[in-house]
Length: 106
Image (tube, rainbow, N blue to C red):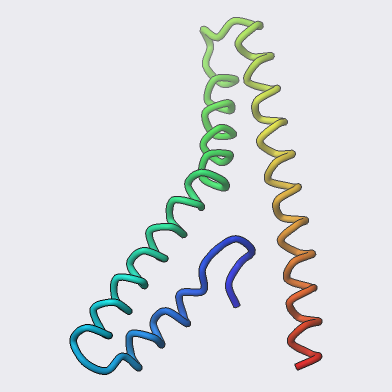
């Protein structure tokens, strides 16, 4: 099962395996590559960016020469990133539960 908002690469790999001929195999391979690139880009923009924000903020907090103003800003950024990550994970759990219910009905 794919994660919410991401392409299911398993289906794309199956399309490549089932492709018949050069043209079909080429199109299926391009589709697989495009979906893979999309998934990487989506991860970077969502999870990756928030993880980077948290790690950068923690480094700012640990640096001895950081002003209190910058530390406060870093704390706010860390908190916002953690909120976004928590909200995204909750939505992912809800989506996965919905998908499991749909699969049971099939």
